[in-house]
Figure 1: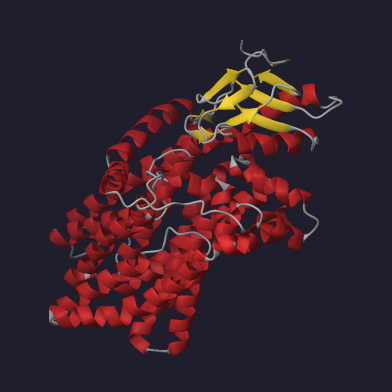
Figure 2: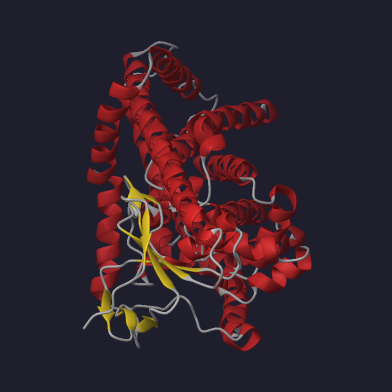
Length: 515
């Protein structure tokens, strides 16, 4: 029965991932840093050359990314669909592993499955699903959850091989992305809560938690952290991420996370619903209704084992500590505040796991609070209706957000195609300045910064001698050239060889120097 339930959960989560994110997969493309990665790998002659090329950039800070991207490029080249399909598979893998881990602690299948499904569907981290460069984080999170799952089982059987594999997975996760750095503290919180509920003295429970959970993971963290400290020596780059220990910055990040979980989520679903319902065809509405009802029904199937007070206590410990430790790496950076749209929505990628857990446990508590005897009860009906009331808006919001990323990519290609007509026959090296082009489409990145446009320009034009600049609010036209005061010292682009492409008019002109 346990194997059948795991297979059923895997199938449900696979369907949810495909329906939620697969509808736009063939039309999605490359965004911002994706163009930089793609250009380097296109220019490299083979896998190892790709590794060495990426090692010259800040990709090396997340060291295992140097292996991941050239390996995937070997299969997909510049076909965006292959990369996007990989993201969907990783979405499913994260949800399924999260389900397995939660089931160990909640002692019940249904709340674990609901939490995993809702975490998959919560529409507040779209860049995690559509931004190819974020594949590093999308692999790191499943590895971290896999590590916690193996460690949980090691707590039961004390098999040293299991512990070793758990810590190896954790280290690999840290060398891909840092968002799961403090996940072991979530494991510690739920383990400590379980020991206390079992009647253990708080001091003894704390000592046991420190010995069984924190000690091995802190050793692994020290090992990975030591490698990170060697980064400037090994690769010759400065640290791309800086710590910010100011209390105001940390609290502001958590405030933004709380807003993402509540008012921004509500407003996003409401506004997306208004747009989507006006644009959707009858067939889409029918499919949406069937998917919403079918998923709610599948997730409402009673478990043979109920979580009870002990399981719900574990769920509360996971949700609360997950909010704290899931956002802590970003809170300490001072530069990554959670957003529900755009590139920085990836900051919510870990947090949605624990928001899904909180919702699932509240739904379970609601049914336990009401009379739950029999197959059809008021509590079960109310729970199913509430679940459908979440799945429906989450689904249309994800579909709408996906469509904005499609339109953002179409805009990028339109911009590059317009410039290509002008530059394909230029006889000498030029710098192309992109003027008055949209930096985003309803939150989805277009060419908001130089580097994406710069690399995309060379890829699509076939001219390796070109460079690209995007006009920014921090730029001024000075006698010596176009000066960007966002940098210290300011970046100066000389007028010689410069052409300005005005996107609305589709015209190219030479710059006029300031007096």
